[in-house]
Amino acid sequence: MLHAVAGYVVVHKLCHLVHPNHSKNFWAFVERFDPAFRQHRDWLKLKGRGLL
Image (cartoon, rainbow, N blue to C red; front, side, top):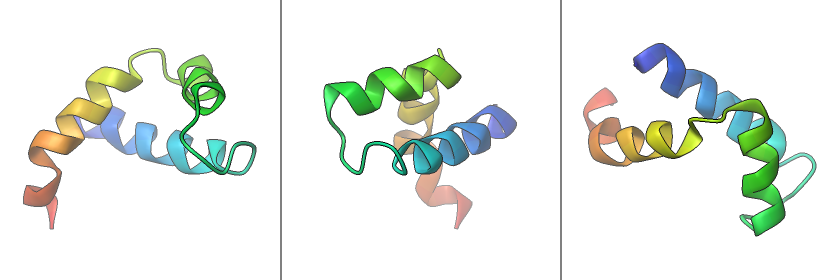
């Protein structure tokens, strides 16, 4: 899962180059590259602090 979450973070950041916000269009763009982004985002919210 950690590998997929790391990929989500990269996709998320790269998508900000096109959409510098968290609008509907931004999340739709993220989903084009990571269809499971919600699962990855939720995992990161729950366990991300433990990575530091």
